[in-house]
Image (cartoon, rainbow over all chains, first blue to last red; front, side):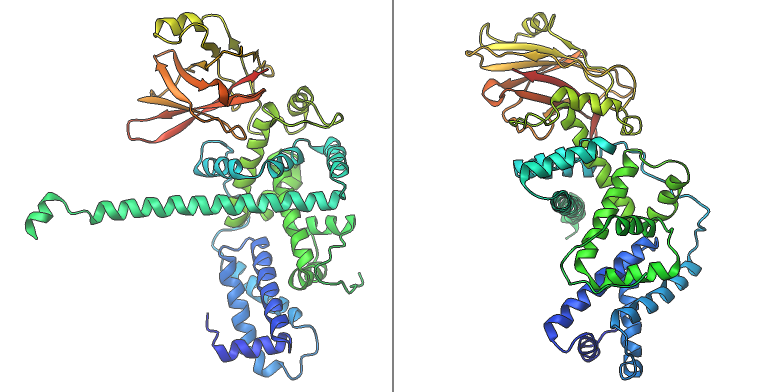
Length: 203
Length: 273
């Protein structure tokens, strides 16, 4: 990332004269770019999002006076070039199907973390997520309608609530897995750092 | 298509827009439509949320086997290309696996009359279009009451009248064969201090040094202790005070010599009346 404070300020100024709104726009653009790069199958979407921002910042002095469209549109154009270049560089051809998880569920670190996170979830939210995913197809539609009716909300609002529960569960699982990884790394580090009887002798 | 100005933070997503979003995620849109949709992704937070929900829905549909043929190929070839999506897919698969368990073991709750009762949920699970690929169907569940008492008395177990034995066979949720699980119920007399569950061990290719068992969420059963183990079964003692009328699933883990734990596929199901 080559952004300096001045160039970042210039970018914010271009996005919106109101600094707070500009900050929100910047965040929205960056989050949107990450989703676009993930959707295009690029590894390290955040890197490409930052690369896009960098390129826009570099060109800003030339374009800002004459550019009349919404800034987001310019980002899209630059992002498309970044995608084209990245896809050209990509080593794996699109004819090769990637490997997929075999769904040996319930036996991974993620499964343990999810079980732990679900235990910590308030009962109401846990039941919401269970009930939301019970059925498929037509039964699902009817079930969601009924669930929404019970809660006096729309089906769309129910869908959003279920989504929010999934997001909180996913965040919890990620935290749990990171903690375990850090603990495991720490243990290994301590094992290495622990002096052996021989090293004690030599010191 | 004419772009309409949309207020930030307000989600007005029509069905055709959802379809378009899905087509974008599967790589089926032309460039002009893609750009228009991407523009919304960068400027409308509410649309971003809708985007994320659609990602989740495609994941869930994939995990539950809703895609077939060319569309399935597009999901795998395009939608699931990135590592982020694959990790998310793993999360979704685990989440739906937990839901599967809960369909057999629903949380205790005063359900609305019209809501699917337990039997309906189990039936829906086994008859639904997703039943085949969905981590395989729960296979065999046999609850054997006879013999538990004998085994327990042989292992110097419970005090008569205080401890109630129940022998369970594992229901293999990973193997997609056999009938729906038969879940037996047990009524605990008022003076019961503990339920002794004799968990019949499935045959294993690798023998662990020992086993561990716990209750699958959402049950939060404390104070479970190992009361005995031999080559045939693991016996756990569960305080009766921890068991409310509900359905439960007990999971079994093998602990190997190197300390690694491995879950034994399937669960031991039972119901307390």
